[in-house]
Image (tube, rainbow, N blue to C red; front, side, top):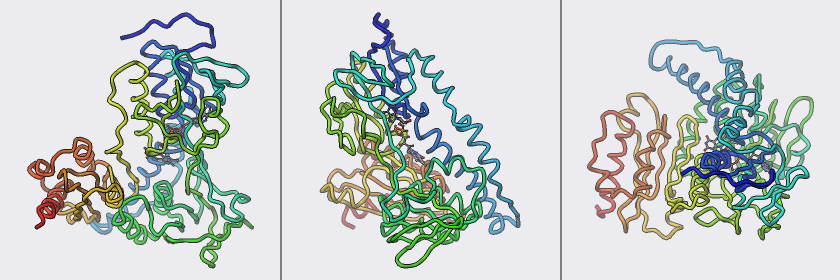
Length: 461
Ligand SMILES: Cc1cc2nc3c(=O)[nH]c(=O)nc-3n(C[C@H](O)[C@H](O)[C@H](O)COP(=O)(O)OP(=O)(O)OC[C@H]3O[C@@H](n4cnc5c(N)ncnc54)[C@H](O)[C@@H]3O)c2cc1C
């Protein structure tokens, strides 16, 4: 039902959204479309990290890099080919198609067309439903939604801060590539960008402090990725202890476990810092030094204050931010849920092979006290036909005989995962999953073998 906006002063709104990442933008547009008086406040670009510096440009790079990878397989499977990688088309697509040269005019217009008002600037909570932006105080009668997101952060390595290192925000603006690159950080972002660069012919060295890449994922996934990276010529150092970093004569040098590693450029992809400092949390009864906010299932963090996205630490993903935005919209519009549920959060590292996971890892399921049963298998007939390596690992709860998590490592793993997402989300009985038809010879047919193995283990066979 569309409501008629109440008459009020120019600086009074029903809802003020501070920070317009993917979730905040969604909230502002949906509430404005429903007739609420909405103010959106954004200090940088409407849409946040994802469209301008994150998901979209990085996936455009990956799309290009994967065509090079496919071309590289011609020699193995279909004769001969020669490719000449050129970063030019990638840089042009990111500038023109993805980011409109890092200009958010279209996004601002979309917001205003929905009926919201937009103010560019830094929003600071002032208490009592008030937000200050550049000397003006705006008031929200229903509430304030925080979606302030993250900024790149760098580990406290001796000398690093004094060097001209890159973060993701520099990497997406590159117009040409270096001959060699040192990447600090073997999480999703570090791995994705390292592989893109390597496929474009850059000599890449990847340094990760943990004992494996994508350390939050299943160890089997890490091993598969490390094998693929090794085969692609990426120098991977896990368990790396970086003593210092220096920059001189156009080269970076890192002291890694007492050994010197050098490269023309350095990319730091070793973590993000939540934008919570100095936004006036103390004025709404929250800890001003909080590193993360802890909302309830309706995303409320204080009286009349909601928080969504990376700052609530329930999965730093665009789809999580938008999901939480949907919860906030329902709550503010007085709907009856459903409220936030994180049993089946999915995530994809868009490397080759893709690492796509949902729900709990085996370790997390055990930590949660479940009686865990797991089974693992390869990509079956299609994996053999296409000569693509990968695996499926399923994690089940013996008591309920349902899947609580799993990982798919393989080409288009994020797509193959969709059955797994549904199974974990809807708690489909394993017996039901087993009796579906699995088209031959698809990658997803490999689920059948792993499910049979799992069912046998559940039966104690
Ligand atoms: C290289 C890279 C690749 C990624 N790839 C993926 C991917 O493939 N899939 C995926 O799901 N996720 C990916 N992510 C993560 C994704 O970008 C974030 O999870 C997503 O942007 C959601 O973040 P958010 O909603 O918390 O806000 P953000 O996108 O961080 O936006 C927050 C906004 O708030 C603004 N802001 C901050 N403080 C204030 C203030 N006080 N006043 C006004 N404005 C303020 C900021 O300027 C920013 O625009 C990637 C991230 C990176 C860096």
